[in-house]
Length: 143
Image (cartoon, rainbow, N blue to C red; front, side):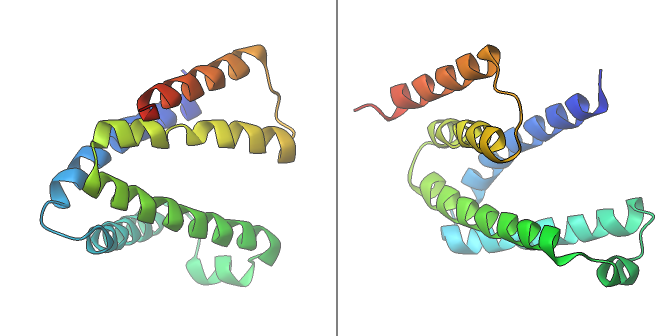
């Protein structure tokens, strides 16, 4: 199995656990405070991972930083924050299984943007998968 598939499967597993743990935690806290705790823990773990598992030096990386790609990463961070803010508001109020499934429809947005801007291939298999994801999302939100 290719490394990227292994990493994606590990990510999928932890993302699934995350939703349920967050729902339990939000019983006692506002979505905003719950997200603040989550982001703090994420920051600590990512910093620790960087320190322990990279051969890079933080100061050197900052000095060598090209600002154009950095702006994309900053924008990615901003969109992640917005996604998490609304996700936490949603799971505080609704069923985490339904909300997480709706959230995974973001894959369709990713496929469209990766085709338009990254010039990645759009195959029949991807289109069929995206269509099924959207169909499932519509089933969940249909009243």
